[in-house]
Image (cartoon, rainbow, N blue to C red; front, side, top):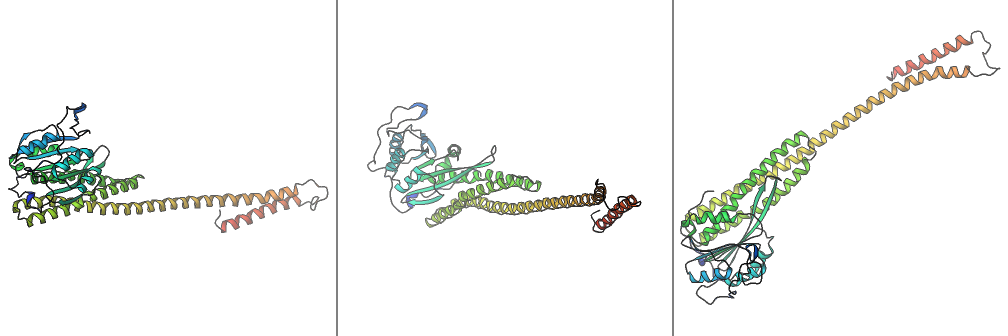
Length: 389
């Protein structure tokens, strides 16, 4: 999607009142002044824990006016600049850091707990003036042909945006760069940041869809080629498609809820158009995912049928081979029986006994040969009639 220029927005202050940080009131649990940076670019920030802030900035009229080096400095700068907005990006923060942010910005303890432990489903919840959003980003890894899922938590308030990442994706640095290059868009406030992030997450689904579609095309080729590993690959891809659907499907409901909320508070129609544009992209992704599930189910069915057919062909070949072997055995057995009869007769008359019938008979030898021939011919005719020869 191209960068969007959003119209002036109503701030989240129009939402029902609740917990909020009051810039003019007494500060809540201000942490000590920052200490010197720790090795490898991390700092202690006075919280007794490793600092996980990736980037922290203060913006006025869409322009970055400060880049605080600690949370405490960010808090002070935001109080000093009444019309400023803070955008704090964190990567796998620990509990002390989120506790400090919760005390400063009035974050609800349930949302903070979700952000600490992660592994949440995509959702959108309102806690007073603060909007809490959980998104599941995804990216396709070409080298291993797998989908990697990321988790992102957002706290959107009247004058602050907190982003908490628990994975490498999405690339919020690119989102920040894009917004800073368009001060008019960034000047719209925290809502502009929210929709830029939603836009980036939704756009990030497109390469995943393309990668999965390519995998399905390869699997279809492997199915008809008879690749023995295709069943396993189809199953693995089916699991990835299900996981991808779990990440994208709730986003449609979340965008619908946001749209309904903006209509209720009479937000400019132009912003709703941008929201619907993001929702259209998500709907297209979900429709493609539904198609993938159907295609993979059909591939499994076709593969099962083809495997059964190949097994039947193999069984048929084995049966034909067995039948051919049986025919050969019949022939061998028949000729063995035919040759056995003369041998038996010759063995009987070849015994060396002095007193035997026909031993001194003049026609004994011709009679023995004739008997051998007649028995052999009879056996041959019998086996021939039965098809053994």
